[in-house]
Image 1 (cartoon, rainbow, N blue to C red):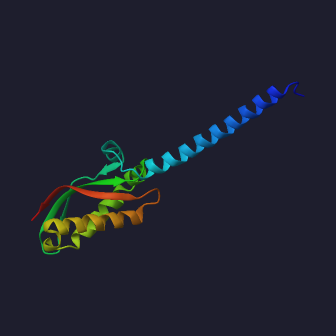
Image 2: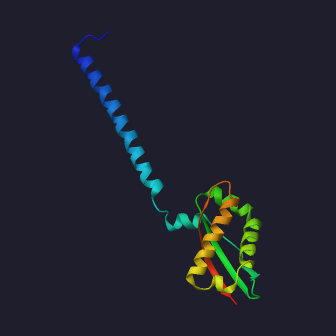
Image 3: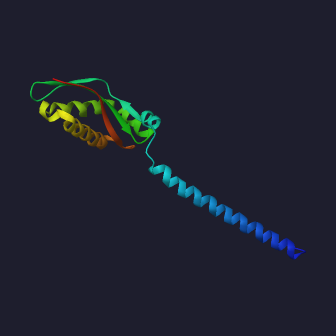
Length: 143
């Protein structure tokens, strides 16, 4: 088939280099993919995958009221689209949660952080196409 040893040697060297190059490429792609998946999202990615609620006013248990607004950060665009469709359910979760609280439960940084975590967990129970990563309080009036 091949007329010279030089041709066979060159063919074997070419095939060896091709296989080695492919292995390096696949290994590099695998290694760098793990780094980007675990990286924190940029601010642009956070905004792109966030949902803003309308301003809500709700009575509290102790006859006070709270007026609030939230930004909900999701893990993907699919989750954002789902949450946009579920906006009435999200509003219901927020109103129901707030109406079961007293003003003392919501005062101070610890109360607000606990509320954000509670809303995150309850909204995640609704979600099928992704998860809520964080709930941010963007407006807050407590009386």
